[in-house]
Image 1 (cartoon, helix red, strand yellow):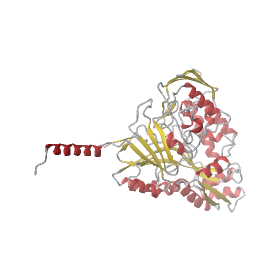
Image 2 (cartoon, one colour):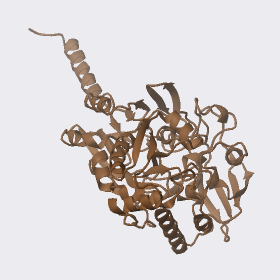
Image 3 (cartoon, helix red, strand yellow):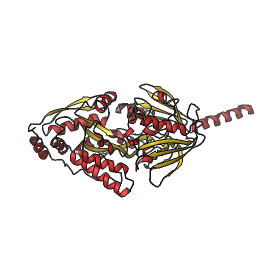
Amino acid sequence: MQFPIKTVLYAAVASLVLIGAAQAQRTDIRIGVVLEPPALDPTAGAAEAIDIVVYQNIFEGLTRVDETGAVQPGLATDWTISEDGLTYTFNLAEGVTFHDGTPFSAEDVVFTFERILADDSVNAQKALYAPIESVTAIDAATVEIVLERPSGMFLFDIGRGDAVIVSPATADTNATDPVGTGPFRFVQWNRGSRIQLARYEEYWGELPALTEASYHFIGDTAAGINALLAEEVDGFNNFASESIALFEADPRFKVLVGTTEGEIIMATNNRQPPFDDLRVRQALAHAIDRQALIDGVSNGFGVPIGSHFAPHHPYYVDLTGTYPHDLEAARALLAEAGFPDGFSTAMKLPPVNYARLGGQILASQFAEIGVTVELINVEWAQWLTDVLTNKDYDLSIVAHVEPFDIGIYADPDYYFGYDDADFQAIISELSTTTDDARRRELAVAAQTRLAEQAVNGFLYQLPQIGVWNAKVEGQWVDSPIEGVVLRDIRWVD
């Protein structure tokens, strides 16, 4: 049978179109995340889940932190620092607009920092920016920030999610309708399901390869496994370690194991009995078997810590031997403190695996020294209210993911209730010292003081275990700061 020449040509063209469509590179990404953020303004909330979605995607700061933890230019293309370390002059990128089309200028920087420092500010890291004495717009593209005292972490701190630049026109609604200057704009938030972003085509910098991104809230591990296997999501930046072997054996996926800034601690209410007694805190420290905890919770992934500091940091010192696992020493300390038969307490646990499973393991370990622990599971909103805000708790388990945040222990009003003049003096000097050698000495002294005082149960460093479609590249392996940064993520053959 013969076919007309036009029919043959049309068929050939159609086949080529179908082949091209089949081979077209994807430009969307669907990311699974365990926690839904309570809001989307990182300058007005403490939850890591906020930065996971918005940091360096929707919002940008004057500087930004890269995957290695180094400070890079952001909305400020460059800067100069005065000889006394007090005056920073930033040159701003030109042609920048917010996602609503409003031009970005130095006045937005002034507004942002005045808002952070205001008396009614709810910024979770407001104390980091306390050294700022003034912020002045020299002209539309130049900002001068003057500090009251030198700050060795200033350029890093203004690159955190807490200091992203916001517009006066939209600051009050960023919690639900975020408007930034980043490479992605907010599209939609389906509560309980997902958040959708789209590439901002008028972005002032290099456009990312992705045109769409969505964050899907999947808190249940089994549901997350099913979503990955069914290819309903393209990856999780941090996934339950107990299921990793399944994905390591499947060529459709790749597993990326890195580090985070997440110190997992057994938070302890130092302001109330019996935990206001150092001997009780020391007893609990002796009762903790960190390696058993790591093996039981995360299949051996994680580095034991003896103080509130990341093991990969150059200032880190290993203090895990301060109170080694020693049940006899623990019982003796409890008896000395007036609890020869132990006591009963409660532990409030947020809805994450390391806390819920970790609580069960710690309760079992404490039972060996006569301490009975009631485990109380709470949702994040209740944890933030009860524990973080109202300090209504005995014990808890949580990961503190903010980088270089040891200074939180210098605030006696923080939820730990730790009030120690010696530690406060160390942090006071550390915060104003720029000499690296002296900063290291002070950081070691701070770590040592916390360890000796057994302020909290210092457990282990939270690993980042990413499970991704094998064709996705450009995602961060390590997490030196909170966020799933989209700018370099792309699909490859």
